[in-house]
Image (tube, rainbow, N blue to C red):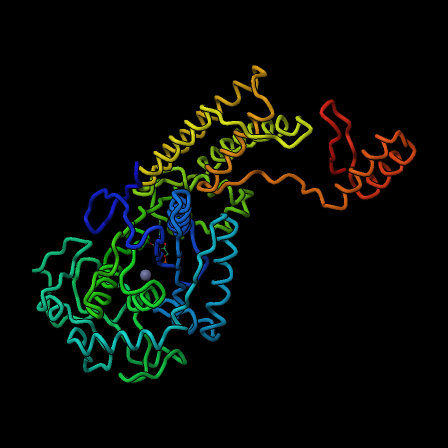
Length: 472
Ligand code: AMP
Ligand code: ZN
């Protein structure tokens, strides 16, 4: 079965056929760095990570781009209130964002362009739109996209969201980055400098000012991935106006299709309600870490439901995630013990039960990234492995094969394994020389090494399956 994805553009499930397989160009709208990202934002970024990992699991070569929106209305307000520079203000949240991304074990995007480092590309795109008659400078000095001119040229504004053409009120303009979702209005491409902007402005052929939010993404995505690329992602709130405007700007400037597949993740609620600071249900990732939850537990929970379903995040759910990870960890630890008991490198043997689990896991992903079905396969397989181990019917090679299958599944799920104490190479080397001394019946030397290890904080436990190192 091939990979099928729900394309917001066609409002249907479609076979995924990239423009130049096996390459896939994927752009995910990144964070607006004016605050710490909240758990709702993280649902969307973990979803983007799932898309990337699932494509790589299917052997596509993904070029993953995620922009940093580092100039925008809310940021300017933050700069003004904090009295810092734009770069100092955004740098703290950008660093925090990438630390959090790592905590959630999301793969780092290959390119992370900043809007402020693409001002020439943005200006050139605005210039093209003016030249093609799709943009105009208004009396306030700002440059706006003309929806009427765009439609007049036979282009569709409203490709992602069916919009009522009667709602078009020509001449109505918005300068704000976030305008009413019901209104179709000409939107700002270049915002003329105003006193509230302080030092945040750039020179341009249209006068001093700064870019609008939507044009930033068009300029950066097309610069890196080309005028037409495969996949564009974001949370469902970005469908209109942000993504609709990106399509209009990009296709208006190039005259060719912008993106083949649009994927949108549904929102996250907390304890059944829209997150808000006043309701006390607003969590950043850091708030949850401070409560003692780990990145992998939070990732497990964020990845438990299908991306197109609204997800209700609860603290009880996090407890459940902790327990379900413990089940996997326990099974993996037992498998490792059996695999190592061979006393020689294990030789993963083909196994029909593993192959079938991996096949069903892949089928679930093919079905529009049905991650809840994929977890279902994992837990059923873990149950089967546990039963075989309880019946002493698992050979070291069988255990090694199961572990290899888990590696493949985890390349998509990204929960890794519970980290035990890492054994430093120096300590492993000491253990190895103690074993050598014992083999040579030099028990005095073996005991000395035991003492050395103890002094370094490690004890040796001799078990039926060989020596084990433990931290004191
Ligand atoms: P922002 O930094 O506000 O531009 O948002 C970053 C990403 O988070 C965007 O893709 C939004 O669609 C997404 N997002 C915002 N709120 C939520 C939420 N409650 N649930 C899921 N995604 C969200
Ligand atoms: Zn964007």
